[in-house]
Image 1 (cartoon, one colour):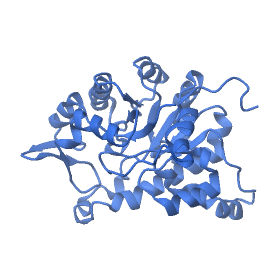
Image 2 (image 1 turned 60 degrees about the vertical axis):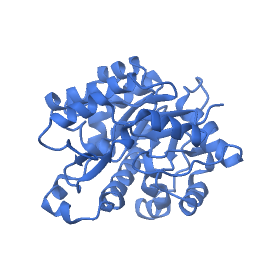
Image 3 (image 1 turned 45 degrees about the vertical axis):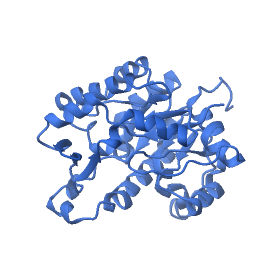
Length: 312
């Protein structure tokens, strides 16, 4: 069974060209050593030429023993939430880039949220995407989930997974104060809160509305399942049992958090996600039982359509 990294980012030449044309975030500004990323509400960050080199990324896959990597548009850029006329060329560039990737790479599709259309899900899957990614704020509360529910229903019809990834920083934080923040600030505050909100929204109403949808949460859903005791205390209900169709990628986290998540949702729900090139973690060893589960067994369950009646 192949080994899979379910969470990477790799800006393609078409997408770089589109971002470089922009004067407002999200945008890329060229300089001698690479690019400067400008994203609303976050400090500027550097994107090196090495980070967008497909050949080097393929070498990394072999070095870490990974057979296949799934490339996602970083929803933190805010592309999906732009007005439709701005988002369209960027989303098309993302899909063109996925189609140009060499063997051992596949991609998550992306759709615009200014006017969510289920046909956009059809189109992305028809182009070979394994599923669709959405920014966590698109599921931040019940009303938000209702708005994107037609997209989730269409994914469910195709028996394709949904990948929930941190989205753009809230508009209230998108001001000059962002320049004074350390680069890691959004990842430890906004991103975590977004992922927890999306997870609780899906727990509260999403699973009932979409009983067969397979869902992957980046960064262990910000540790949201660890709040189940508090959820039970505040909601008056029992803590929910682990959902066999909800998966969690391990990006950014280490042994302490993994042990806590295993105790809460079970090892069978965790999959390996590196978040390259943002991070450069060591992949788990595929010859160990836990490594095989993260890289192969669990990833296969996430990405493979479920037999009818399997969950009855």
